[in-house]
Amino acid sequence: MEPAGQGEGQEPLVDRRISVSAAFEGSEEIALARDLARCFLTEVQARHGLPVSQRAMGMVQLVVSEMVTNARKYAPGPCLLTLEVNEGTVEVTVWDSDTTLPAVGAMDPSRVGQHGLEIVMAVCKSFCVHREPVGKRITAAIELADDPG
Image 1 (tube, rainbow, N blue to C red):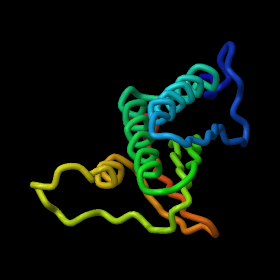
Image 2 (image 1 turned 30 degrees about the vertical axis):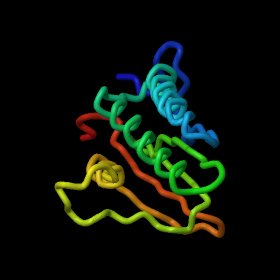
Image 3 (image 1 turned 90 degrees about the horizontal axis):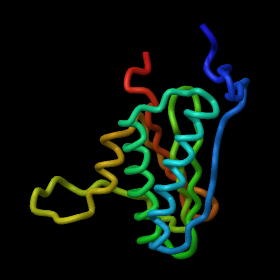
Image 4 (image 1 turned 45 degrees about the vertical axis):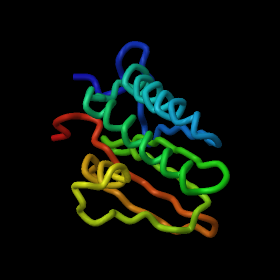
């Protein structure tokens, strides 16, 4: 059996991470952020031989969409999106200039909208927020394979 990344036309994954980053300045660019995530995971699978389930592909695009939407909605200036594959997960990190940390609202079945953070936290393996000297950095990790074991 060949190690992942050793197949024909695939680059081996030695001890390096695979990542991509982009800055987004307008709300119209949220679709571009989703496309970046889809293209990145497609390349990770094709070029490096890592398994990326359809569920993971959809969840990563959903998380990117929610996180970039929130950054564009609540923070002035651009936001930075980084996608990084690390030990069977893809870490979605969004930096923005707003120092206000996100908070999950109280349960309210009549509330319309403002469920993005709840959705992100429900579908991710881990979720963390870090204050930065300017703004904050939010990272959510999603398993790439349906059965990581």
